[in-house]
Structure formats: structure tokens, C-alpha cells
Image: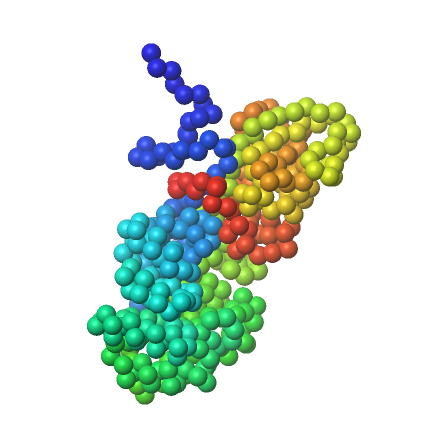
Length: 391
């Protein structure tokens, strides 16, 4: 009779349809119901006819791009924003048929042909890229859709306001160029409403010129997550939520009046337990020394997984609903934790690095504060070798 596989090789939280196979006990769970909850909350802030572009770039800010793009499509979202051709192509190959805007620059310009082949909408930021797109359209004998990016104060991508008018004239005179959208990006929507309004005023002036003087028809969009919740005047025809889709705060204290649910939980299991004496040193540099007889657990998570080294001796994890401190320096593949105060701790116990367990919770913002960074970077840093499981 065939024996059952040992429990450490089974995946108790896998779906029956397609069980993800991994042996290293370190994974991320992505809750699709919480993703849909956040979408619903975003829609409640919008007028009925306002469209949504779900910004699912950078592997959905570390949450798993393809899986959440599929959920956005199921929810009837009209547009998805990505950062590169590679991301857009991977979504198309996964069966995503929603409109996809490539928010990043495409260069060399010949790569616009790749966008056309995969039905991806490129962003245009200057006359040179517009001319290159026109050449490809003439060569292919077809009209090509694009969105025009306008730099009203971000200083990253887009044509400057003073230079946008001849470019719009060119669009209006060229049937091969179909500007289906125009957008800008706010630099300080989370902290500075005055400058944000200045950007909005600059952008809407250009939008009015394009529509009233040139007769162009397109979707105007500007609002990121922070602007979406702070200022309804920024909504225009479409909004571009990113971080809020994943239940993370787009600005300080946002949770006081925006009820979102974190989509991501990062988990591991204890793979080694040691009872050690007082005066015992743990990890590189001997920066952690026990002051009493202690129980030290090892978990298969390290900075190569995106668990930042700055969390050494500063961060906490959850075991059996109790906070346990990081003991010593986070290493490349392994981290040690002090579980002395956890009653009944066992090999194989679940460890939560981000998320809730019992009455306790480790928030992304908590880790970001220790690392002196923003919540975006914490989740984006979770490396590709950590499996993402949709639950």
C-alpha cells in the first residue's frame, strides 16, 4: 500500500484544482475577497460613471500581479495599469482581455510595435515618441491608440504643459494617432492639497483645450489613491488606485476614515527549535545575547526573501497569537526569533511576519517605520522566490 506523504511535504491550504508545490515553509497568502472589498469601498467614493484603472504594476506591489489582474477583470474593471511591456505581455498570456495601459516609457521606439501586437496601450511623453508611433502606424496601415502623459509637477514622465499644445495639434491632424486618454500624476496628493490643486488646474486647462479647441475625445485621468480619497475634484473620467486596492494606507492616518482590508499575509513555519542557556549569542555579529535560559526558533525567511535586514533585533513576528522579537541579525535565508514566552511552542508552528494571528497584528506600516521607508517598498520587496497563494 502506498504511504501518505509526510506532513511537511503537503500543502494544507492549497486548492484542489491546482495545488502549488513548494517545500520551503515561507509563503504569502493573498485574500481575493479582501481585494474585492477594497474595490467596493473605492467605488463608493466615485460617481456612477467614473471609470477605474486598477494599477497592478510591479507584481501588484508584491501581491501577485496575474492573480489580482484576473480578479480585477472579474470585477469588471475597465483598465489595468502596468509599468512595462513585459508585465502587459504576461497579463495577455494569462488571458487578461481588459484594456491595459503601459505607464512606463517605451524605448527604443521600435518596441511600440510590441505594444501593438499585444494590444497594449502605450504612454507618450514627447514629440519624438509620438512621431515614432506615427511611423509604425503608417507602416502597419492602422490607427494606434495611446495615452498622453502630461508632467504638471511630478518631474518624472510626461510632456511639460508649455510643450503640450503643438503635440496636441499634431494628434488632431494625424488620423493614424488615436489619443484615447490623457493623464497626469500627482507628486504630493498625500501631503500637500495646495500643490495638488495647482497640478489639477494645469491639467484641466490642457484637457479643455484639447476637447474644445481641437475636438479630441478621450478619457482624462489623474487621481492616485491619495487624491481619490482626499479630493473628489481629481476624479475626472477615471481614477487610478494602486496601494488602496491592497488595503494599505495611501496617506498617514487614512485608516481613520477609509475602511480597507489588507490583502496580503506573509507566513512561515518554525523549522528548528533550540533551548539555549543564558549568555548565548545568536546570529552574525553576536548582536543578540540571551539574559536567561531561552527558546530560539529558526524560520526560513531572510533578506533574500525581502525580509529587510534592518528588522534585525527590532522587528516582531507572531507565534500562537503572541509577539516574538527577532533575535539577532536577519540573514540571507534564515531568521531567528525568541519564542521563550510562547506556551506550548512546537516545531512546525505557523509564524506570521505580516498580518493577523489571534488578537495581534503585524502591519506593513509597522515594518515600514522600522525600515524608515514607505509601505509600498515593504510589499514590493517580497521576492519572487516567496510563493503567492490566492485564498
